[in-house]
Image (cartoon, rainbow, N blue to C red; front, side, top):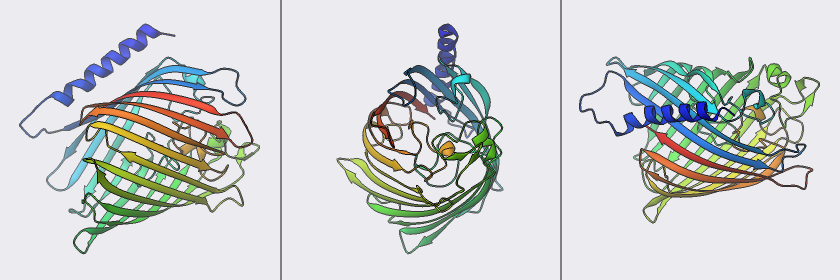
Length: 355
């Protein structure tokens, strides 16, 4: 399984990732370097329709730089590198949103700041909407343009608006288009205790390539086309407070696909205490997720879950980390596809470093 080559790739990734995190440079750099390293071990068993289990190791490094100008412009470019014990040919049947062994472009964009209130960005980068794994995979990088804006209300509240249009830029020549609009309101932003609400609309178009290339996954198909259209109306509620000197955050995500006649609703509830990677120390989390078959576009939902729709399941996890340097997280996914009695178990062990 090419273990020597894989180990060498991982060692190189860790060496590259480790240097910037501990380096100190008192002078403002011309380029702000950034990156994210993840080394993952996985075991998935009792998969419906498959006799084999999945046991694999994967590593992914995203590294790049940003340049800021005095006139308000920001330019960024980043690469992604991956190495794994599995083959890229297995990505379809393993329901991955990224192939394991690859070198490619992660980000390439230009952004212009609108003072302290917002920005306009054009290019390839992270999806700008506030979301959960129910509707979007945080590893995906669409290509497009968007506007973010914020209005302060009273002393501590704020209104948020994000609007954009994107090419999905998924695997295998994906030709999808995504129109996105989100409006949110935050009560007591910046305080230890507060509440936020975000209402989003996502309109997915030109999904024929996704279906033809095997990325329909748990969504219904007619031949090589998806049965439903995907126009998602999503409500995300977030409450936060402080418990035992660590943040406690609850999220409730409710989604309905307005483009489906039935099997169109989904929900996710999560409760997280602590933040191992950003704040350090312990993190404990639990989430429950239920999505009917056409509630979300499965190709763009988080692929840490084996079933992106047509299933229900829960995910407990525990993590420990050193703030701003690394974290180690163990996660369990206990899922059951609709119409199947057997439970699918997925266990992930993730070592993360971010700078």
